[in-house]
Length: 288
Image (cartoon, rainbow, N blue to C red; front, side, top):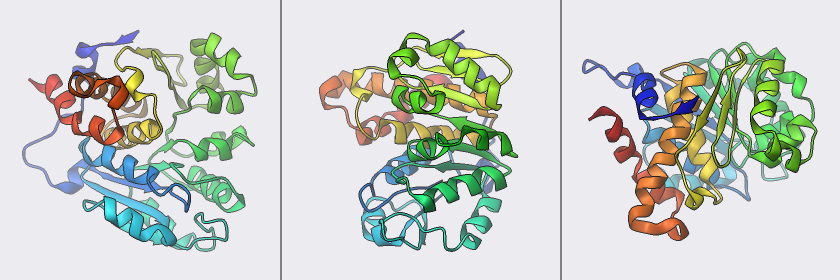
């Protein structure tokens, strides 16, 4: 089933007038590393512009200046950094406290892969009760042992591109691209997750055997950081609706914002910051 405007309007979470920031949930983003400080910032931007009541960002303390220079609307949670410039697993207490307060969690954006981050991803999967969005390096951590997904107490949303899906599914990327729907459905049913396979006509499948196909978006989104922005959008929506609808609507709005943006900026010059600026227009098109 294609995701069209009518479906998007139907699954868009309603915002009551008598509300406060707690009404719309807290999104916790865990990510970033010395080499990729911008990734969690882009995810945070997506969450902020997609209706989250509060956005918190947990990152290695050595990138504090880079993160705070780009974000002013978040709560900062700097964590210990290991020798690889990634988040250390020395102290789970801080993360545990914030996980318990979160309405949704995004993990993996720019996080890097090492024994510490593998432990953190596993810990979040096993100990979180809200929806968790696994992206980027969280997927690469899981690819070593996908069975960890079955230990989740919550709804999981995985957002791989074809290369990451190939590692998760233990097949070549060419096979993934030739069998996008069947691969997505098979994986979602086997591990009990919502699977969003990125690319042209993004596929969203769930554990119940449902599939949705997104038809918005353009080649301007085929740039680094696009997946981070998408994760942020989905994270905000997942704080207010179920995993399957959040992933479906997130893909639709992300692509639609890109479609609006290229009218003024072209597919060549589109950036994630520009795309984020058009999220308001994308949402507006659904509520007019």
